[in-house]
Each structure stands twice: as C-alpha cells, then as structure tokens.
Length: 139
Image (tube, rainbow, N blue to C red; front, side, top):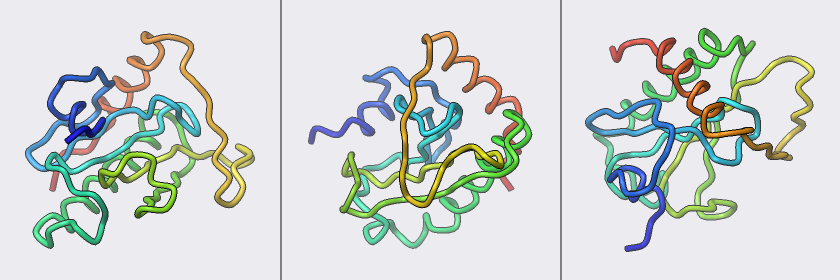
C-alpha cells in the first residue's frame, strides 16, 4: 500500500510530530489553513471514519480535544475548527482529523480552506514544539 500517512507513522517520511502514542499520531499539515494546523491519524491504516474500529472512537475524540486545547494554550488561538472528510475531498485515503487554530476575524469562511506555508523547517518545528509543550496529558 502506498499511503503517505502510513509512511509518516512509520517514520519513513519526515513530519513535525505533535503526538506519537499507541493508537494515534498527530503532525503538522504541510499546507496548513493556518500555522499550527494539525492532522490526527490512527496509527493503523483506516480509510474513513466508517472503517474506524469502535474501540478507537473515544480515543480519537479525546485526542482531538487535547490537540484543540493545545492550540489555544500553546498558540494563543481563540478556538479551533475540527473537521474530517470521508472519501469526498479526502486528499489522503487514511482517516485524518484536521485541528485548525482559529482567531476571530482570521478570514476563514464556511468550507473555503485557503492554504499557507511555513517559511522554513525551523518555523514548522517551532509550531510543533509549542503545541507539544501545551498538550494536556491523556485522560
């Protein structure tokens, strides 16, 4: 199988990892809506939410919640946009949850997702480190 996210989980493709736990991995999106935009994926290959084993449902939600809290505490966001696509608009066929830091007046409207880039690998690593430092412990 040729899955970019599986390659990131395996360590074969570099990424700014924010969470590396038994069931889930989270890393910065390389084309973020806003800087600090994180993708949360199950460690095992799961194509869509419909394929996610029931035993991972609560963990996915809890981990996404922790990432949302880290965006507020670590990046100064006022809130977050948390979303996932299933098949349609799913650029990588591996379940992933977008956790996007938000501030009032940031320009995001509806489901129009403009993309930006990080100025350098150092800048993205700094955003990842800020999120890691602010990440609440698993419950």
